[in-house]
Length: 253
Image 1 (cartoon, rainbow, N blue to C red):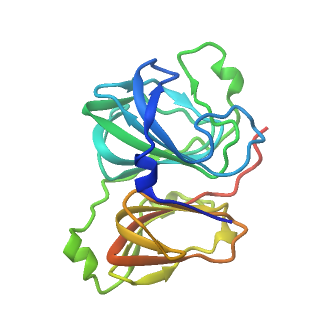
Image 2 (image 1 turned 180 degrees about the vertical axis):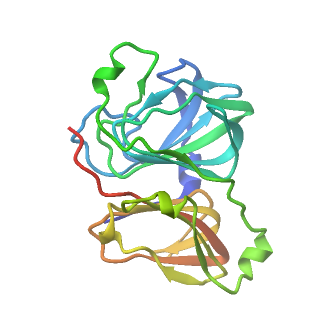
């Protein structure tokens, strides 16, 4: 199955959320799936946007599922590393990260998970967190800053590109993350979904055509590994998209 959601619809449905870690009010909405889940058997993709309050701190924590995390707006710090638009994080399941601190004007992140599972945050500041830790590769990678094109440069681009965002020499499984750049109405075949455990396509700039609809900035598509192919097609303004592929991994019990 291919799941698609226009970013405009998601941003129009932001609601007040009380952070389970800090108790501070911020804003959030769901692309796919519930906002929180403690059910290890919960299926289907889960993708959530969070708009942090100014100077808010999210304490160190981990999730029971693997995730990518996009930073499309605002600035902040993750531990000692600065985060700014556009940057991408990859984190294996049961791998702690943080604190995540928003700047004076807020910070936005979008968490992407291939399955919902037991995805609720487990905070290292709360007792009993060690009982919930399970084996993992413990990767917690943050990409370099990803530069996006100006509107005319993107629209009139003549050649497609598909460039890696993480050091491929450090990857020993199916994990992959790329920035795809296409001029107006250009297209390219996406990765074969059957080779890994599904992937997301995030519209970072321009628009993407899917089933006759134009998906604008911050739109998402999730391609399940049961699909045989997916075509990434730019709209009339061109397209810059993040393509984030999940590795196959053992079932977490």
